[in-house]
Length: 60
Ligand SMILES: [Zn+2]
Image (tube, rainbow, N blue to C red; front, side, top):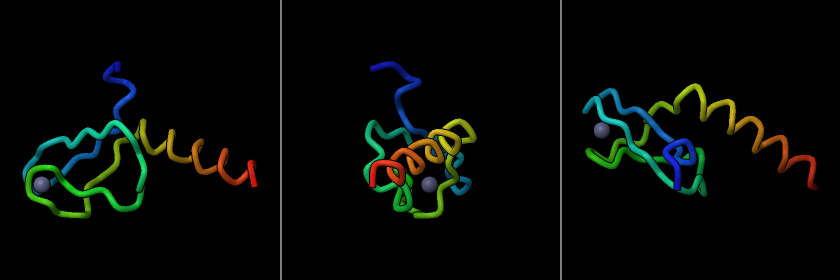
């Protein structure tokens, strides 16, 4: 598992990154430190997420 394979979210409250291996619930990610739900997805993962959503839509 490379670091690039992890999805990272930034929590402004604790200024920590939450890294998750599998993006099962992209819209429902919580900070691993304080549990807040409104963590910010990284720009790289935002692009990945768009790709992922597009791939899902195309497979329907
Ligand atoms: Zn937090």
